[in-house]
Length: 69
Image (cartoon, one colour):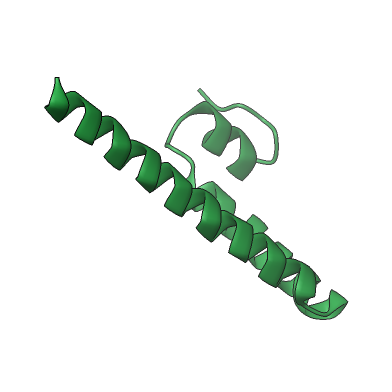
């Protein structure tokens, strides 16, 4: 039983760490000047198709909305 509690505590700590990192990223993003913010956003949007799994959404995005068989 104690092993399960330790595991749950580890998961909660990991989630808290991820939320803290996301929070810091959002705060840093909001502190950027407008032009830097737009540049960063455009860069992330360009990288987005690379992070998606291969399949319908990526194929649809790359082909400009036309689904290819």
